[in-house]
Length: 407
Image 1 (cartoon, rainbow, N blue to C red):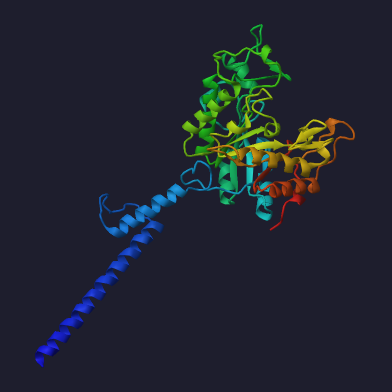
Image 2 (cartoon, helix red, strand yellow; image 1 turned 135 degrees about the vertical axis):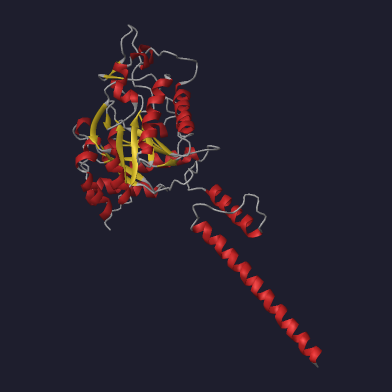
């Protein structure tokens, strides 16, 4: 009898010990998972631990990292934002920022494109890039640290715009970087000098500004004027010219940017007409299927007023494109989508620039006044084409705020 009692007690004790052991294992597993969520500053886990739970956690972390953030290059810890934004000049960022913060806090607007270096070559903030100071490009219009801090505190996505090859300040102060004419002087197109896209020192200037902007709080860099100038190529003289096609020169710059700004979110503005025209028919170095190879986002500037009268887009003829913003945007994006569907490998996310300005200069009867209705039509066209992000452009930054959904 006593032996039976002792045997039963032994069994009960053994069951209890097993239960405690299993509970302890579960508790350890919970702590490991909590460390994933709230990591310690000085983890004490050895690198070669063979604990099954730790190995499973590492596998999950690697899987999550491979999954990425949804941008084509899965830029590390960078958060992808579904952008609905506006372009702001450096001056606007300096004197009207609060207005646009309030706008973002009360509407669907959640991002701003702000000039780092504009098409005049002006660097609009207190830059410490040596070349910007040397050539006198710095003209402080806003406090970059204050602006990015306020945008970040209001959960507004900040995109820094850098105009690359249209830069009269750099061209005039560093003529060895510039496109020249046949007489040896600086090439001029529409009263503006351009930088030579073959010149790698000019590339580095744009990269140095981009790195500074990112380090001081911008979330993304948007390159603009990533092209050769308009005009007759026979009138242009390029130092260091080689046998690369023009579009490959532009692509090589963007590949260099990707290399030097590894892990960052990069975008680029392009002519909208390249979504329609084959290869580099415009002769500016923008080949639709290739120019986005090293970009996370591409922004065709789909301004209806900029299309020629009678332009055919996606098989549809537009006698007066400015009068049909919905049709122009929709068909440009449908054409872009159809072309990208045939591309094997990398394609960027399409995030178009839309028109919110009135183009009176295109001739009476050819233009209309753009306001909230025209803006809404373009937004709807973006969605109907199967895209979800957009930006608006107005050089004066007077936007049709009634077009944007209120919160």
